[in-house]
Image (cartoon, rainbow, N blue to C red):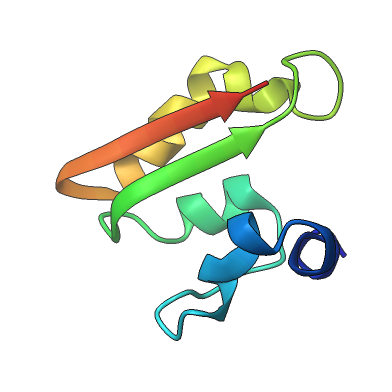
Length: 81
């Protein structure tokens, strides 16, 4: 629902979701990244506070998994508000 609500209430931010190059996967991000090593040029994580449901995105294990999913020279960016 996050993507659909973003399209409705945050169209400027969600405009990239309409780009044909954009693919959205609705599943456990840890499992997804583990199953796709050496795949991505960039991984951008937009998360909430490091307390609560998003706390795992601030732990060493996440960065290891994300790093392994990057191609050589890949880039990781973490946003939190």
